[in-house]
Length: 161
Image 1: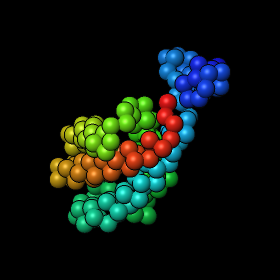
Image 2 (image 1 turned 135 degrees about the vertical axis):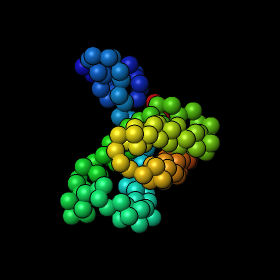
Image 3 (image 1 turned 120 degrees about the horizontal axis):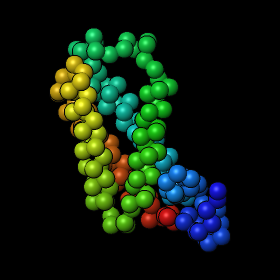
């Protein structure tokens, strides 16, 4: 069912989709699409550098815990980063208040705390050293803070929901 209440555009124009179960409105406006593209590109580039270059020695030291490089599921890895980025963009755009770069930093801190919680569960259930969990969290803080700050400079130029 199309929503014509004007969430993402002018009244009478279709807007994204509405979940028939929850009534949740998901808007595909310009701000969301641009934010999603920015975060997908940024987070993939950052993940390549952070994990592929900077954390590589730590992964090599714990090689028994990971798939061999030839066995890595690259499509799932990049798809997961893209999905996280798209949903993070939606969360950011939905809560965007136009208060400047500190809003981007706040977003980075919130996302880091969420992922750190997942890291604690991973640490509790898998034999991954805690220092790697902390490095993942530092990477999340850097990645999502810079991503959020980038969005605070770009979103004011776009019409947000």
